[in-house]
Length: 201
Image 1 (cartoon, rainbow, N blue to C red):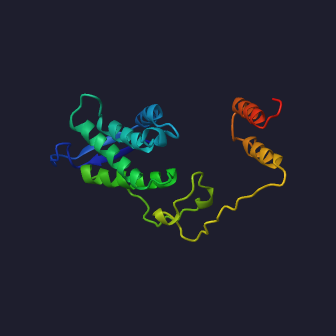
Image 2 (cartoon, rainbow, N blue to C red):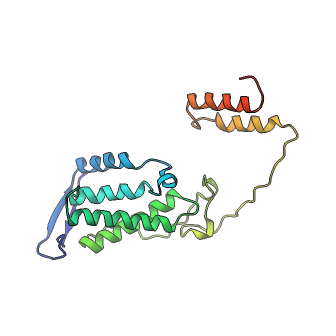
Image 3 (cartoon, one colour):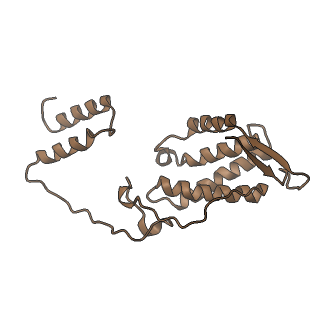
């Protein structure tokens, strides 16, 4: 459903008149299209740019009509993306997409209010993350502002199987579980692991 945002402050900082900005479904589709061109999973580690930054930048760009050659509209959009990148940077080590999104949305809402006097109603509640043990890179635990604090950090005990083939079997059990990899990738992994183990492919 299209939304309507009201801006009390013009781009030049004055308060000349109240200007409505209607957010249409086409605007939302455009944001997704722009984001898809830049936000790719895993690129935060490869390029230093988390996909959340261009995603929120696209929201501001569509809202302001920013594009190459524009003046203050482009500057504000880049300022928003920069602030998002900064808050993500401060939460890194290791990365956590959930923490990044939570912190970025707070920064974006504060930025909207600061620049345009637009206040978005968000629920003020304390977030206690329940994904600690499911984190693929290792949770930051107490270093993360969303850490619940009620989780025990389990130490990984090195397990040396009596049968060396157990490692091989465990590897394939994980690799071939539903949704882990596509079929072609599984075949390549199987071939590589077989050759590495000295087996016939």
